[in-house]
Amino acid sequence: MPEFIIVNPQAEKHIALIQLNRSKELNALNLQLMQELRDALKELDNNDEVRAIIITGNEKAFAAGADIKQMAGKSAIDMLNIDQFSTWDQIKKTKKPLIAAVCGFALGGGCELMMHCDLIVASETARIGQPEIKIGVMPGAGGTQRLTRAVGKALAMEVVLTGRFLTAEEALKAGLINKIVPNEMCLREAFALAKNIAAQSPVAVKLAKEAVLAAFNTSLDEGLILERKNFYLCFASEDQKEGMNAFIEKRTPDFKGK
Ligand code: CAA
Image (cartoon, helix red, strand yellow):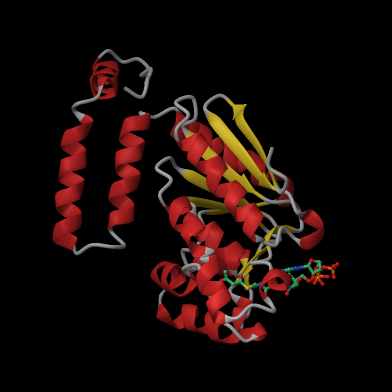
C-alpha cells in the first residue's frame, strides 16, 4: 500500500483518482512519493477499465515542490546516483490522459508535475511557480522547458529567474492551464473533463495524446508524419467503425477501446 498517495482506480466509471497525501508538508514530493506515483500511474495505464486519470492534492497545496529537507545535504554525486528524475521519465510515458486538479500551491516540482498533465483545472486559489532560484538552485524536472513552451520566453524567464508565483488568472491568460473554477468546484470540474474524455474512443484518445505531445519534440514534418500514421491506425480499431456508424445511425457511440 502506498504511504504518500491515495489511489482510487474507479473513482467514477473509467476514471481513476490519485490524491497526493503529505498534507502537513504541503505534498512536498519526496523520493518515495514520486516512486509511488510512478508505480500507480503504470498500473492505471495498464488497467483497461481506466480511461482518464486525475491527479490532485488538497485545498492548500497541489504540491509545494521537491522535498527540500531530503535534498538539502546532498552532493552533486549523491544527486546523480539517486537519479530522481528517472522516476519522472517513467511518469512522462503515461499514455492515458492525465488531468491535474490544482488548489493552492503548485511550486517547483509541483508545477512540473502539473505540467506533466495533459489538462489542468485550477482553483482561484492556485499559486503556480518555479521558486527554486530562491533556494539557490533551478528547476530540474522540466520546468525551464515545459514552462517556456507553454507561456513563452518572457514570462518563463520572469517566473524562473525571480521565483514569483503566478495567480490562476495569470496562468490562464498565459495558456498554462485550461480553466479556473471556485475551490470547491475544482475536483468536480476535473471529473467533468475526465468524463467527457472517457466517453471517447480510448484508442483514439491515446493516439491523439501521443500526436499532440510529439509537437513539442519534433519538426513540423515529423509531427505530421506521426499524426498521419496515428490517424490511419485509428482505422484498425473497432471504435472507429462504432464511432462512424453511430454518427450515421444518429446514436451515441459505445466505445470499447478495441
Ligand atoms: N520541501 C519540504 N518541505 C516543505 C516544502 C518543500 N518543498 N514546502 C513546504 N514544506 C513544509 C515546510 O517546511 C513546513 O514544514 P514544518 O511545519 O515542519 O516547518 C510545512 O511544509 C508547511 O510549510 P510553511 O510553513 O512554509 O507554509 P506557508 O504557508 O508559510 O508557506 C510556501 C507555503 C510558500 C509554499 C512555502 O512552504 C515554500 O516556499 N515552500 C517551498 C517552495 C519551493 O521552494 N519549492 C521548490 C522546491 S525545489 C524543487 O522542486 C526542485 C525541482 O525542480 C524538482
